[in-house]
Image 1 (cartoon, rainbow, N blue to C red):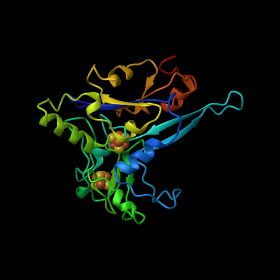
Image 2: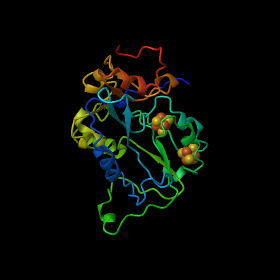
Image 3: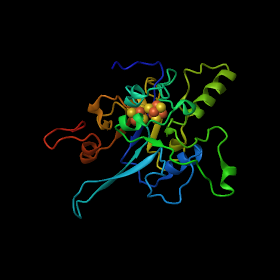
Amino acid sequence: MQVKEFKVKWGMVVDLDKCTGCGACMVACQAENNIAPVTEGSNKLRTLTWMLVYELSNGKDFPEHDIAYLPRPCMQCGKPSCSTVCPVVATTKDEEGGIVSQIYPRCIGCRYCMAACPYHARYFNWFDPVWPEGMDKTLNISTSVRPRGVVEKCTFCHHRFAAAKEKARMEGRDPMHLEEEDYIPACVEVCPTGAIVFGDLNNPEHKVAKLAKSRYAFRLLERLGTDPQVYYMSKREWVRRQGDNYLENEKTKGE
Ligand code: SF4
Ligand code: SF4
């Protein structure tokens, strides 16, 4: 499958040496995108975590022991295996920003996309969402609430992209040439250590464009050829090795 190149390609670079695993990105994502809280978080049928922080370990004993945290949103793949399998075109790649969309009213809940996504970034609504009394008043009016029976996933806070484009138009600016500060997803905004940098990978003035080319940058399961728009970086070789599932005898990038 050819990667379709778009003028604007929104992407992230997550510095795993800065991430402390605090989980603020997960909470901000839940609140921003109207993801209902669950009473039993270990129930894998119920949990929906568009942003999920994984813990990695080098597997060594003290004092060589080391850990890292890896936040995992949707990778907004350049070649999204989720969208090619959808029988009703309920998920497509947005040509204005390279973001993989989910069209909830069109989804028939077959879950082919979940099976096809190698990053486990998609979630099925087994139940209608329920908010504790009073909490429904905090729902975000910019984001829809999804019903039982459809699949959902991280959208890079696409509603914020739409609002940024609209604001640029109102101010007479080019909506296809946004500044970094015009469009910032909730997880990026809230991260206390600045571990997540967001911007247009095709715009050399945006920090992500430079960071993605770092010798320490890598992508998850890069060799599957999905061309993710989410990059990671770490100066620790064992972290890069786990991120892209290197074999024992292979050299990682950055070595
Ligand atoms: S679950 Fe919905 S989005 Fe996924 S493949 Fe089926 S119809 Fe398409
Ligand atoms: S990470 Fe998964 S859900 Fe996201 S675009 Fe890639 S294949 Fe689709």
